[in-house]
Length: 410
Image (cartoon, rainbow, N blue to C red; front, side):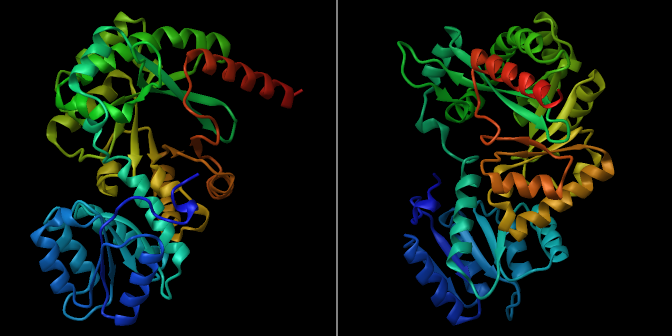
């Protein structure tokens, strides 16, 4: 059950509201208090709001702003937030048609601002509550991994071969077939206990230059597991492996990656490389590596779209094969007009470029029903299909899914 479905917002978020209507400011502050958000600053002047935020951009987690305001309008205000690298999320207080949502989203991305959504006037508390749910999802990408595991503990896990691959399937909703298995990492604890998920240690691995060691150990194990998966399900099943932008900045990445695959009897055609767009991909070294990986024969996937700042112009230039839409855009999409407009825009791009479009984190039947009705060719990944599983459980799941498909066609 999500935090918001329990009535209160349990995270301690700091909020600023900017609107020239005093009535809106009063109503929103009352709604925040009802949701358990106490740290709220209200501004009826965008200039004053920006001056305060500029002094300490990291002070606020969420800024809500009207568009049509005197002196400084909402679009200028959002652009100025981008100029100071505002790290929080922004919500527009306005009912916007789809084309305006798309334009506002493009402008926000160009200015490195996380535009989380919009709420229409009159404001309803369930819409505000939903925004905090989306903020929870977005914050999953920014959690401090250092609070969970140390460099020494990670080194110990790698050196003692305790990095365990887990697998999350991606399903073609037209054929019902599993196209690939995303490789995720966990740490087997010494002497038993709960496993540590990758979100707890990827940041530590990056900071201490351990990402390649971590990735190579995963590939070694996943390559052996792939034989079991293919024998059980299909010979054309692929592995999807995540590479961090910091790994892509290394111009030797294509050579290193191809070598470690060949040592484990894998070819580029066996692998989909997933590239997170949570960090900018515009650096020359990163773009060169992406192009060289494509030349080697790898399929490329732009992962976590919606969590970063990749604009549509760059997406037309990247040699990618698919776009994976991040969970904040998928959660409760059946009633979120902002997310619907963005996903429709992504659908236009993927249709135009003949790319796959994947919805990540699908957890509710309502989300699945909306997505498959509006985007029949979409691929689905998430807990509604199945959670991430270790090899033995995934083999059994694939066996049952293959048997179920046979039964349907008898």
